[in-house]
Amino acid sequence: MKMELTLAAASEKETLQNLLEKYLCEFSQWDKSDVDEQGLYGYPYLDCYFTEENRWPYLIWADGKLAGFILVNDYPEVPEETDFCLSEFFILYKYRRCGIGKQAAFRVFDCHRGRWQLKRHPHNTGSVFFWNRVVDEYTGGNYTLIEGYPNREVDYDDGTPADVFLFDNQNI
Image (cartoon, rainbow, N blue to C red; front, side, top):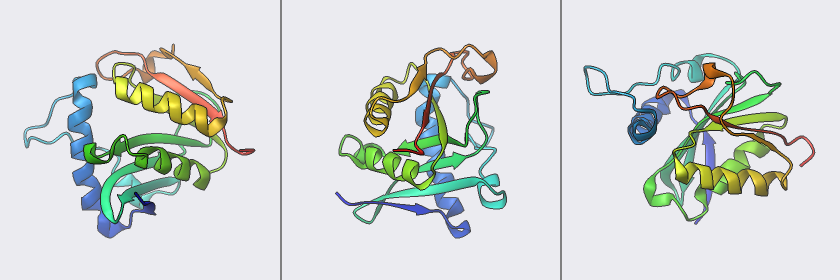
């Protein structure tokens, strides 16, 4: 399956918004978030990805079909020296376990060289397995994983401490 990663244009903001709703709905089983009065989860930073510098909204395509998205920015979620933060990552269920997610992650890491961080919810076992494998393979084992990050400000909405990966890909 051929994977393509494209920077989302302003004209694709609604497409990204629709995918974010699917992602947030799925993620609500772990962070226990609720919908608003209109039945939407909403993503308060979406507009920022199209109006501010140092935010990169990517769409993921598989054989020409929309398969997911990645949001990258330079706003670290944990107080560690960081150039890039993988803020959100989503692959539609149909395209999971076929290599699309790994290819997309590798490609976005290659597009942005520097110190990275990404966090995951430890109860999302699919994510735990995926990121353990992807980060280890991408970095050749040269990364730090802080399970249950001690800074309570980065806990998920349900109170669960985040697991945080830190790595530098400048020499990979």
